[in-house]
Length: 161
Image (cartoon, rainbow, N blue to C red; front, side, top):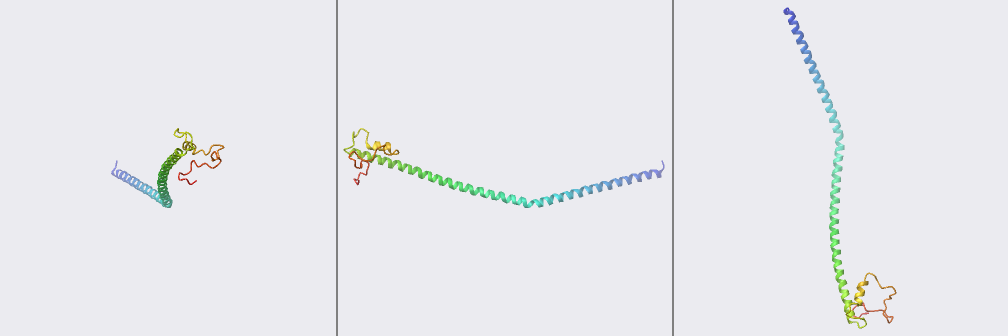
């Protein structure tokens, strides 16, 4: 082979390599341009969603505030319920004490009353009154004694009736 042929082959190879390098460079440049364009589109979508994201954040914060307010109200009502329960228990204890005092007074009146039969046997007006306190008078009972006058057996001890 002649030297001029070898030179032409080397020049041709160099030209082909240069063309390949330019093609690769242009291909990389186009790829970067496509990537830049895609990144720009994604940023535009994100910017358009910003107001929606902020609205959702505001709604979440509002919901959280409402939940805290409801929890505080529930705690307040629970404390109020506890206070009412304690008051009810106290009143129940007072009512029991008053009922005991009332029954004791009736028994004292029965012990003093000469018209109460079988004193000391345990069947007194006080015992019958305690048995019927939630039931009311027996059927046919008029609340009057044997004489037809109102009975005073369960009245106050001071004699005001």
